Length: 316
Image (cartoon, rainbow, N blue to C red; front, top):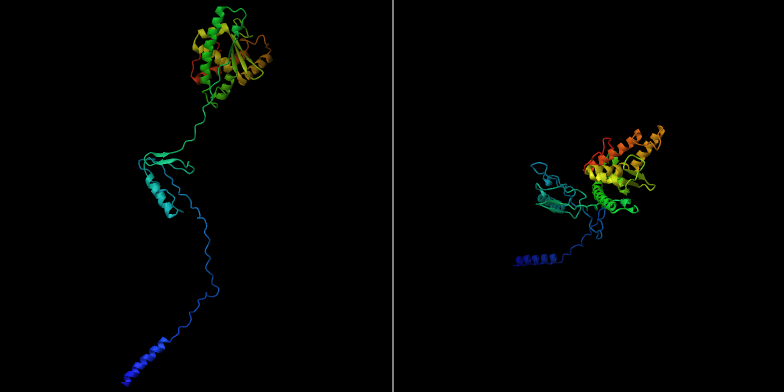
């Protein structure tokens, strides 16, 4: 019994001793010497922009279309960007795929079945309409003009106006940079637009063997004087002959080029001993000047697609 009590008392004693145990205070953890403290948390900042995905699709060059996903630059993309780019590549892998180039209008639409619809720059405004024909009828200003002459002059003016209007439209269809017998389209248009066709009374003369004359004015314009009977003669002939007369005077002799050719040939005529009185068919320089105007007129007629007929064997 005593032994049992002793064992019990020993156990009780041991229990009391265990219950009275005191744990030591927790040890404070300290950083080792020369260690770097953790960084302070950064304040909230706007997210850094990520580069836009660039999708480049090539068009079909043979029976096997170029797979867009084979050429897409996925480097540097986020996972979401790469996934979106691959989805776009899959959608665009078709024979109808066209190139989407850098700098393309961001508002352009992409259709899987219909290819690419690109925004088109607005068309330039249409060119201004050709100017109306410059025609003056001095034949109607003759004092005491007869009814028959009034009818003749009026009909001649009507025919002249119709043909000049048609030629004006065709001449203005020329490109400004188009070269025709050494002249640009712009030079031809300028010469034609600055010329006035002036119908003169019957019997008018101009110091040359023809039935008209071109006069260069101080302001850079020209006046092509057409004697009424000579004009009616051309109009009674063929359309090609009428066009010869108008282009010969209105383009060949007009403009800066016409004046330069006239001045050069006349100066050479005088240098060769000629005079103003014999500056006619007998002068090589007179013939050269007329032939030059005819060559220009013929080249213009060919360029605008109208008939052209020489009025005589002289070639002018």
